[in-house]
Image (cartoon, rainbow, N blue to C red; front, side, top):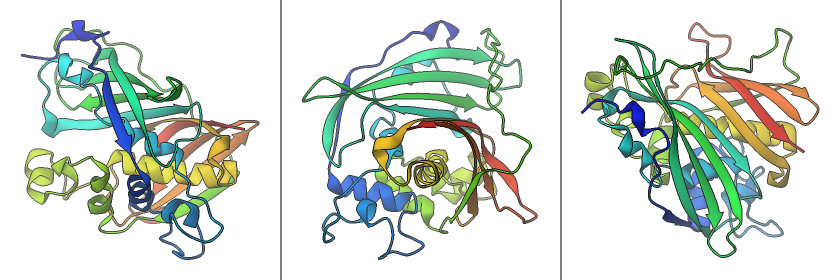
Length: 292
């Protein structure tokens, strides 16, 4: 069975997702928190019992809480998982994510696009997470999956061009983080066990990469961490939303530089890998963050 273009609007099962303080700590170190100076910075994200410090969560933790929830994507037809890449990701926060809790999540397929025979197929999804205790919406997710070379199934091409572009002038803020060689092995413990990020055979033989790549949502988390510190003074209550596209894979051990252009209570951003080196490339682009 090929991709089904009539699956737009298909809704997944309502599922519960719970997490606790240990999950929040693990996510934080998975996106590099505390790596630069473990005992002098970001202790509010990496510890739960430091004196006079209350544990907090990163806003992007919502993407792992909601990862794969509901299974709406399974209604899109037969997908070649070896050729699947994360195309874009967005999150809107209605309140800071608590250190622990339970949400009910419902997801749906919001779009299916056919870029032509031999080209890509793109599947857009949306999900809403509500707090089980109160019924209030905690966060909303938006994302797209790109299935390389799977176009030509008779769907609509659609206009999927980005609407946000980085200015030509120098960024107002620039923050760099070094990923570790074992970054993917740490991040995957938050729930994304795709072997593309850990199994050399899968990465090379099935996916066509020279070695396992870093999870797109890990790069997204590194980027969100920089946005939180650069635009919100490290305060999750000021973080509103974050949307961007994945433009190139990241390999564990590479340095990521997040560039931001502020305009009132929003900022355009992008993330560059290996800045100033021969391997320099934009890995996250067309980003828009709102805050205040």
